[in-house]
Amino acid sequence: MTKMSLFVLPVFVLGALWSGTTPLFNAGGTGRAVDAKVSIHEWDVPTPNSRPHDPTVAPDGALWYTGQLANKLGRLDPKTGTIKEFPLKTPGSGPHGLAADKQGNIWFTANFKAYIGKLDPRTSEVSEYPMPDPRARDPHSLTFNSEGLIFFTTQDSNFVGRLDPATGKITLKEVPTQHALPYGIIIGPDAAVYFCEFGSNKIGRIDPGTLDIREYMLPDAAARPRRLTNNPDHLIYYSDFARGYLGRFDPQSGKVEEWASPGGPTSHPYGIASTSDGTVWYSESGIKPNTIVAFDPRSKSFQHWPIPSGGGVVRNMVATRDDKLYLACSGVNKVAVVEISH
Image 1 (tube, rainbow, N blue to C red):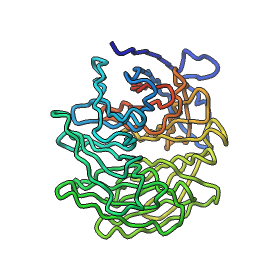
Image 2 (tube, rainbow, N blue to C red):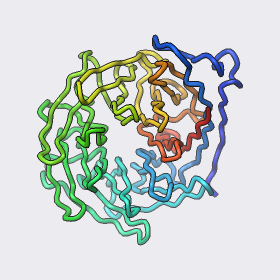
Image 3 (spheres, rainbow, N blue to C red):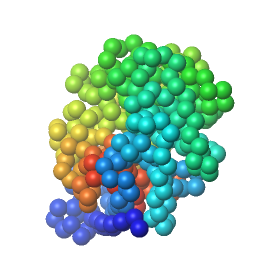
Image 4 (cartoon, rainbow, N blue to C red):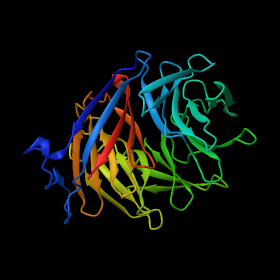
């Protein structure tokens, strides 16, 4: 049986450190605090040293994750705690990014073997779509747009790309900035594709039709954006890993605002997601144990909680339709579900 642990952190239990009425950290805003309570449920991944990486939500609500060092994909049923793992057919694929299509197929990037894969959970069959250019050796993160096309980044290879699942055709585009390290990727509120340039202080915008790239420079030269999330306010939030900041980017005006993360300059904000009420959630990977941080854009206030297992670097997270958070806790070989109440 898969081991599960439950850790509940209502704010009021933590007394003077985390008050239910006063935010732990206020970034200059006024108004109400975030005032959230979280319960963190964690499950051990069956394969030891799997290094669970990016989580995603399947249409049936299951949590899927990539076992990067186990060469497997995994599925957690949060209702029962049951985990099933699916081995990949090519050894050493290094599955990394993850996304589910509307039919329930699970798509992943083979970070070590230069292909994008599709798992059919009903049959366990894996299909592989190799990169058309040998220079594009390390597909990293991927996302679907509303038309069912996949857009992805390749980190060290410095490409972004598009895959049409209907035909299997992959089109690549080199990023203008050298050593940009294309990283996290989302579909923005304007239906364009946005990605982090983790090797520079830039956010890139991809035209989904032409793959033309426009780059937006962030104000601080030391900024290194790593992950992105959409928000109901139609703005894009990003984790500035290098400087310990949360940033907000307006895709219409190009305006950038940023706030120091509660953990300070070495807190290394990483995985990030937004819930339907507009709260931005992310993890500080440089804090031991890692934290879950909530940011309220209206009051510009923060709350944060430790991850009970330590987290071991939460590289990515995703919000579900019912406003839970799915996490992969890489260094401690666990996956987690964060339940939120106010």
